[in-house]
Image (tube, rainbow, N blue to C red; front, side, top):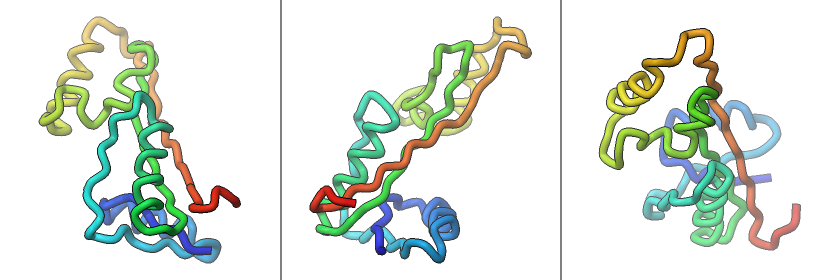
Length: 128
C-alpha cells in the first residue's frame, strides 16, 4: 500500500517513513501542492483538512497528522493552537514565554502536560 504524506516537514516525513517501513510505502508530499490552511477547532479537524487536501490534489490515499501540547492546568491549552499560541507570527520562544507566563501562579507539581497527536488516513473511494 502507498500513502502520500501531507507534511512538508522533512524531519517528520522521515520519522513517519521509518515507523511505516516494511508495511506501507510513504510517498513525499508533491511540492507543487500549496500549503493547506489549518483552521479547524481541534487536532483531528486539522489532520483531516491536510489529508483531504492532499488526497483531493493527487487522487491518491493520504496520511496527515496534527500535534498539540495539552496542559492540564490550562484546561488542555494551548492544544490545537500550540504552534501559534503567542500569535500568528510568533515563534517557538514566544510560545514558550507565553505558556510559562500563563503557568506562573501554578505550582510545579500541578503543571502536568502531554503532547497529543492525531493521525488521519483518507482514501479517495472512502474504503479501507
